[in-house]
Length: 194
Image (cartoon, rainbow, N blue to C red):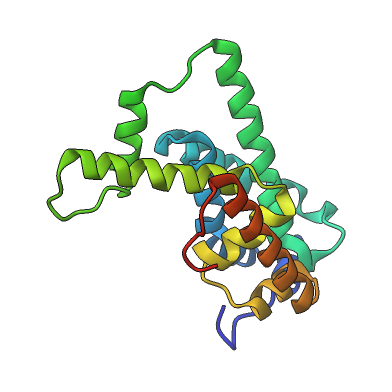
């Protein structure tokens, strides 16, 4: 968000008033964040895209019910997360776990494999390590996962995260520190950037 971009609460107010372009700006602002979440949870590009579209439709329809427009980002994140959980439950009920082939293909399609020529074993090892980190972050409680996503995927500053979530910068810094510790404990290693 640049210095002249309207804050979330202003866009929410305009969107509730019927300005569809304002909601479009909100959707554009958080599209990558919820896309990453959906892909982390599903491992399937098409399913993730469906979830993102459904999340945006639900958010648009329920926007007038949002109590604190400053928390639009976390509200949208939670809508997306609930849709991912529903997707996962439906998949479990159908009894269709992801095969190794599907998993490998999803990593390849997402661009997770390095483009440089590497031995297949090294590529698989890198994908496996990346998958472990993604799984560790995905296992975090929501309040920790969202700050990790905003900081390391969206590359937001502590101040930007603070503004988006409507919480003090010190709280965000503390939560990021705790989240990183939890990820490190789960992986049994030190994570880069910690």
